[in-house]
Image (cartoon, rainbow, N blue to C red; front, side, top):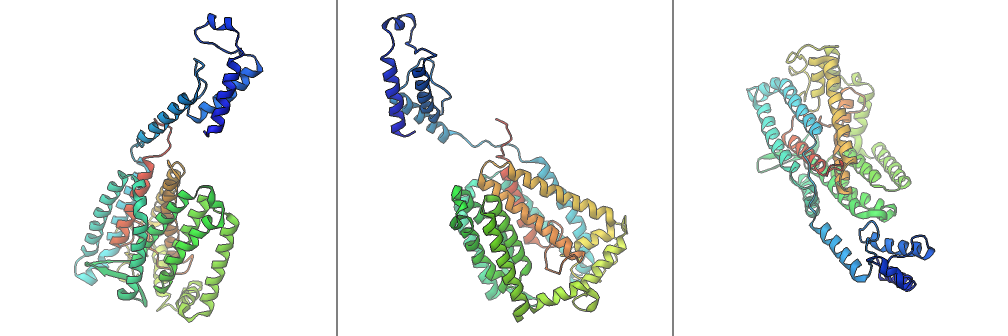
Length: 453
């Protein structure tokens, strides 16, 4: 409370105290004011306001008030806040069990979908699954570590992590491995991975951190839309140069959701979104560098227009889904994975799930993902602070978008974009990072506002 208000409270007290009759003080240990008088009510309002600012519910019973007393209360309150420890609770059990269940389910289906290609490429059915198991072990360890790590301690490392993500995106353009006409992979120390996976998490953390300190300033353009444009402006050009349209879409939509949840102006967000969509549509239709996008859209409309080339993978995927029927052919009994369906262990593992476990297995998988996503948003809504809420929201949104887009591509609901299915698709670095992200959500859950003391 400022000095002016405190002085007013003391002056009011001194004035009223001088009006107390001399005999009144002899009948009680402490002189008290008439309880029904108008001056008494004015005094108590002023005094209570002073003490409310110090964290005290009402005027002390002894009627004492004064600058020294208020300073003492303010000092004791500040010391208590400084000494108060963060209240931790056990990690959210439903979220953890859903992650663990999807991980186990994914490893089984990935092995089933990969062993034919593993024999063909490496002479053993266990090469790919062994790599995936190693990544799952490392990722699970990272998830457990981050679960018991205070996520707020990450704030000071976020700018460095974001800078490393940009450096990796630049490096992949210089010395990245090219596949199917696109440079998206880089090998460092024998580890082959996509820097775009690191960039996705870096964008989420950076925006969550910036918006958590924005406060009411987020209603201004400079704080609401400025960080969104700035962060995406440093990431998206490199993704487009890699011809990584799927990562571009994922990062953009996830960033927009974080800005919306943080409280950015919806009109400005809508305007930026429409403008961006218009620019992308114009670029795809006019610039030759996006010929591959136009070709994919054409094949998406009719896969049988190019059945032996661009439409081949989609056709084989649809065959696998149709072959499964209601109950599937049985675990391990897929026919399309026998070198008919390319990338059956990667982006198209959901097709093998449908073929071997049928509609029942596919619905079960989708229900597990829906439950995990819903629980992730629940944790976000109950986070102890804005940074934790936005961090959990961004990670959950990324998971939801990847799941939706992968299933949409496999079922030919949208054009091919090259999005993996979380916990199921082959890819060690991607799986390890996904599990680490789940650890961050679990870390947020340990400080949730649950009403427990």
